[in-house]
Image (tube, rainbow, N blue to C red; front, side, top):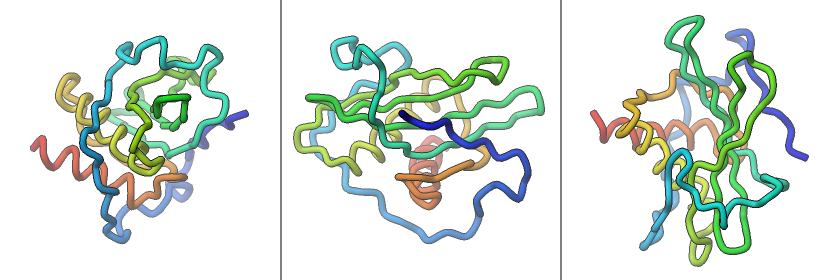
Length: 162
């Protein structure tokens, strides 16, 4: 059973955001033929019962105003033949957490770490390009991907779109 992400409610509950080691992301395997986007992951890749044993990558937040924000938590799942990136988000009323598959890549010759980093890179690139989403405002939690990893992925995506 996967636990819900923790939402920081006070500034002191946020992890330190500014001073972190600069990290290198794992090398991107070639080819890296991934499928990315809302509703784009084929049903044949998605487990019928949802992600049962997934790896919690971390959580980021966008906060444009007190009434306009979004929390995204990311999970990685290894299927029989694919790595699958899941988005976990809360419904409008901040109640139940929902799951959505947002990216996948064949697992052959792709390590867990490569899949985690590069599927997230590709998803955020997709968001920036097609939905005009700016860089997240802060990182709420790092887990499998550290705060430094999430910062490096964000820099890679949004520095190249500027």
